[in-house]
Structures are given as C-alpha cells and as structure tokens.
Image 1 (cartoon, rainbow over the protein chains, first blue to last red):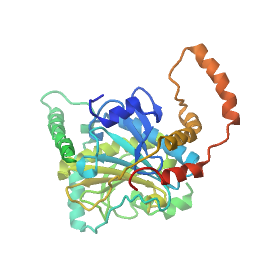
Image 2 (cartoon, rainbow over the protein chains, first blue to last red):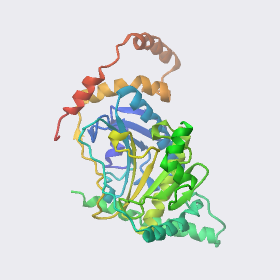
Image 3 (cartoon, one colour):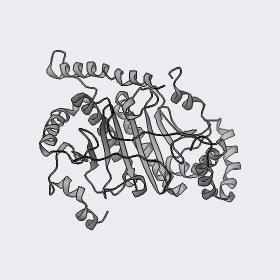
Image 4 (spheres, chains in turn red, cyan):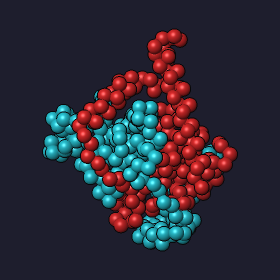
Length: 177
Length: 191
C-alpha cells in the first residue's frame, strides 16, 4: 500500500470490489471511462506492468479473461476493450499497474483509436531485426541469472540498470496538473 | 473454430507463413509480428497460434501466457526504441474497434506527441448505478470465479447465512439491465 495512491485507496476502501484474493483486486470504477468500467490490479503497489512479476501479470490477464466472459453474459454488452497504460505518454494516470476493462455499446462516445501509417518495408525490416535480437533472449526477463561474471549474469545486471530508467516514466506523471 | 474460419483468416495465414510478415517473436502458443500500418514505431500484433476470433473465447491459460509475453515485448520496445510508454490494447467486437477476424493484443510503443489517442476520459458514476451493476454481476461472478463478497466467517455463521441466501437467489428477479444502462448513460459529471 502506497500513501496517496488512488488505486491503493480503491483496493482498501471501495464498496464495489467484484473479486479479490491475496494478490489482486477487481473493482468497478467510480470515475469511469465507459459503462461498467472495471479495473484489475495488483494489491501490491507496482508502478507499472513492467515491475509486476510475470506470474502476477499472468494471473491478472487470466482473471480479466473470466471477467470478460461474465460481462458479455450478464450485461449484454456489444464489445469490450482491454487497456494497459504504461507511462504518462500512454495516459497512465496513477503510479500503480492497472488493467482496464471497458465494456462498449454502440455510439457510447468512447474513442480509442489511432491513425495507421504505412511503414516502409526497409524500416520494418530494421525494426524486426532489433526486436529479434532482444526477444531471442526472452529468458532475460525471467528471474534467473547465470553465474556471477557470466555473460548471462552481466546481461541481467544491464536489465536491472535499464529498469532503473523506468522511473523516468513515472516522473512524467508528476507533470499531470 | 471451424476449419473454414481458419482457412479464410488472414492472420492464420500470417502465422503459418503463407502470407509474409515481419515476425519478431514466436513460441509454441503465440506469435508477434510488426503491424505494417503501425500507430507508432515498433507497433506489434501479438496473437495466439490457434485461431480464436475473440480474446474472450480463449482459454484463460492462453490469455495468461499472452499477458506475460506482452510484458516482455513492452520491455523490449522501451529498451530498443527509447519509447516513453506502452499501450497494451485489445478490442473484442466491432463496436470496440475490432477489425481483424483473429484475437489480437496490440503492443504500441508510445512517444511524446505521437498520434495514437488511447486516453481515457472519465465521468463520475452514481453509487446507486454501481450497486446495481455489482448486483447484476454477482451471480455470474460466483459461477465463473467461485467468488462471493463475504469475508471468511466462522463455519457455523457461514452455513446459516448460506441457508438464508439460497432461497433469495432462486426467487429474486433478474435486474433490469436496460435501466442500468440508461442510468449509466445519464451519469453525473461532465459528459
């Protein structure tokens, strides 16, 4: 629990908790972006999804999946959006990981969109190569490191240092008036 | 998921390699490719290898796996492209903006001043409306998640309460969902 965190407050005091266990809480938003806007979140205060342990990310997504089925079955909604916002530039409002479930009705006034731009194949190829060099070592994101001094251990140290840079994503939240 | 659906699905063809793509990640359950009409640099489409038209019909174990992979890919995007944020987004149903016939999670790197508009504008909702919504969801939540709101009680008190609650559940009329929707559409605060 972090002092001054709206999400932590909601977890501890909301009258509209729909589900909770020792790790996560699910509640109806009192300040909602859509009909029956639901938040799935971790009880522990993690500033963004990137800081949440993999097993908890998995659990949040699994519970969100079940809640989605409940929404379609119980409320006759016509659509549903999932949205995780990481960083101020993505619209993250609170320094606490949340997964938003946004039920949709036709002409509900909610606009979640972007303008697609055609990308040049050469640029896509370059981006692909950079991703592949990273994702081929997806084990880097698992909490295992090789022996100290090994290439694997050094790589994990680089990742930890890089994760320290994540704080700048949060610092930008302070710019929100 | 019929064979016909899979055969006609352009994303199944991308996954199988029949249609070329810029694949960046693959495991036994899912594939991530670059969007060739991206919202921003590094925009990824993460999808299950098996054909599902909607995220909501996927087994939750598979959704859980996609969640983990989303996190890894988001981490990569920030590291590689100095993105200042990530939007992880999915649309279920045309009304929600789903254009593809295949369940997809979008991983969209965000940069200052980029053109993607995935911001949430919030409106205060009346407590009465939320109470009705919670009531409308309670039965299905119990069935799907095995969850009821009551805090753990002493066993005898719990048994007593259960005996009282069961008849109520059987005879209580279903809430009027149209009126709940109307209540929310006319909620308090700025529209």
